[in-house]
Image 1 (cartoon, rainbow, N blue to C red):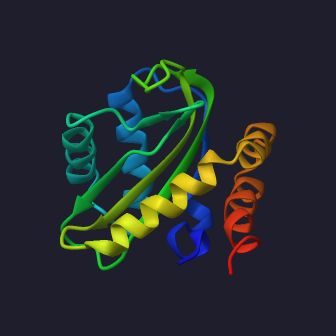
Image 2: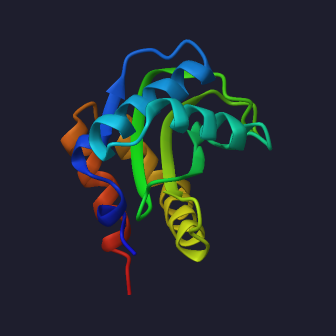
Length: 154
């Protein structure tokens, strides 16, 4: 599994300002609707439901919100770089500026977990995060994300 199979270039965006976690989930859902045809309202609900189990802010300015949804046939992703970091109740209490959301089919077992592990490993790499923070062009951000793992595969 590679990030390039999870993340379409159109699903990578730079967001000026999210005023709250709920607004961020709405922004993620709007991108998922535009790029993957997902229901924005179902996506927001699923993200909030998952977040109620525990925050998905993993530390170092990174959040990995994820949800399982009806109507999906594979795992897909949305990446947002926030120009203004957002308080996200992260484990290290640091605000978040890099958000990689995953959406998986309702009945996906191991594929969802493999995708989450791949994204988590990628976003834990300090060099990848530094490159993401240094770029504001969505095409460059997509390239950084998709090249990070493929260059280390095998």
